[in-house]
Length: 258
Image (cartoon, rainbow, N blue to C red):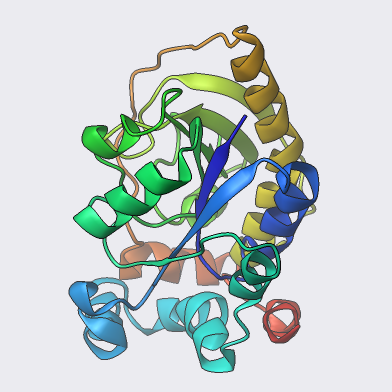
């Protein structure tokens, strides 16, 4: 199975991406790395301003630790890993643009795999791989569709965590489910630590789904999507703070530095 992997550099998924490459590195023919502060999305200043207007100041530490800090450190571990193996590892400004379409066509993958990737693949892009695309999402879909599911899970009266592997579709986190597993996490865990743990716990599930697809044994379960969970509003973050439920802690900062 020839795989094109789409992800981004972030502490939230770095361990999971490493685990996935340890399992499937010989099958990976392309790594597409999204730029979280790409110019087409407004760059770091305009994106930071939009997040502040939408979610308030409580959300900014989460963004800084998990997205801005890796860009500041500029370690580029994925790019180095790919270069050592002679694999293309383009920075993805627009996953549905002509440059990315040409890169996918040149690599010739059978399957597109999304693991913590922040761009939506159009149907025309998914059609470039004979087996389409699948995604690892750190929630129990159809609950908590969207970019920060562990924050919304923490906001539930009794948080439930899990991972889902599903078919990619042009609608966010709405494709048929291939595999799903509930994951028990310790009380008091931060949203950042929960995301790291869930991405990592989902890698074996992702591998199982890929193996079933390769054997032609994958069973898809269609679901009715629940309401989309966007970036959190200030009121939700204030409620989490009152309950002592945190987005980030010092342990998350230390992980980001590593």
